[in-house]
Length: 127
Image (cartoon, rainbow, N blue to C red; front, side):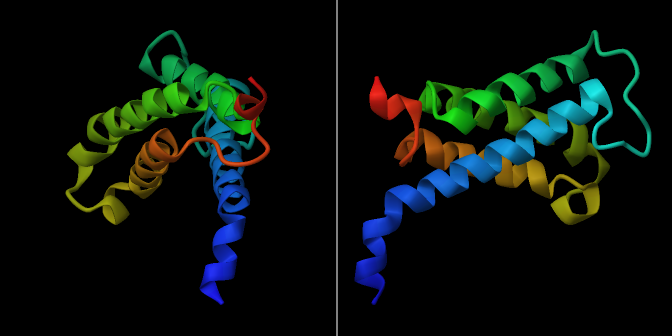
């Protein structure tokens, strides 16, 4: 049974890529447009938080459509690792306690996408 599921590997990878991109874009839109509304809206974006928002929106859109997927995923993997160690790790050792579990998951998903490629339904497949 599971051997037959392997035939759908490109589509499953595409689903992972697309959903991850949508979740990352949501982080960026919260920073820039306060959508969805944050408990404490972000103030001045002319700092690292603004840069993070740009990476989340632009990188997320590129991952969403599957354009330059591997290099963008590589950059986002590093970005989310840095975000975890700068913003979350100082608060607590455990990701569940420091609210950094999403950053860790993003990091490893982008690492996987860097190695595996975009999967199905990607503009990279047309280049």
